[in-house]
Image (cartoon, rainbow, N blue to C red):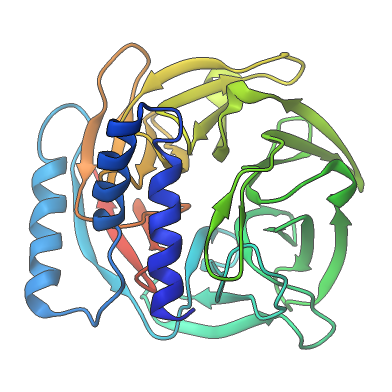
Length: 343
């Protein structure tokens, strides 16, 4: 993606967060958000130290635990959107949009990374090669030997060991525009958020909708829930301890809960907004990233969020290394993955 495209996307995404505010607030918030998502530059030692200090300080108090920055994984990522840890193979998968997140350009790819932060195979799954169709891959999930990938208006499935394509479920008939995050529910079905937005060739954003969560049972898709209350749903995870899904709004400031069969989601907590990655830790802590203030925070129902990492611009769909207690944060506009130790 060219720097001009990154800047256009950053500005458009910032504007989305204030679409329902009054005109004066909209102009101010859009400007602030655009400035908070800068175009990427070569990482410097000073900037690296500042990020480390901010992350450590943010996690040192409050009840969220301590999150210490360990470093960053770099080396060829192109607009990384999601990280998924596979405990079976002890590897990380990283989805790379590689361009405009709405364009069917066929150049998306999935990287395979070792826990020592070395890239084992940058283009483990590559659009346009070996029979692979992959345009702008975003959210990832794993079931058995299958890696599941959200890709604009289709959910694609690959063998996680070989990278070979297994299946593709097309969702354009359900008016999917921007499939974003994906999770497997307790019923074995795949649930994927559709943020309902669309980016033009120059990065201009529209919101044609619908805002929805799509359920895929086997290879059969259906709309699980839709409506304005979802408010551009982005991240989704399953909270097994409470028997519910947790969904983050990208256009609003709410983290929401939803159970299969419910007509609408319910509010869980509020925060800075522009939520992206959401994960539940083994001890029940709920983590969510926010593009609005470049942070990762711990959320609890009825309580104010506790920031555990700051200074992380465009923090996308996070992953958790459950073996080493690490948080992995893809920096969408920075072509890197930040790594934090969780305590």
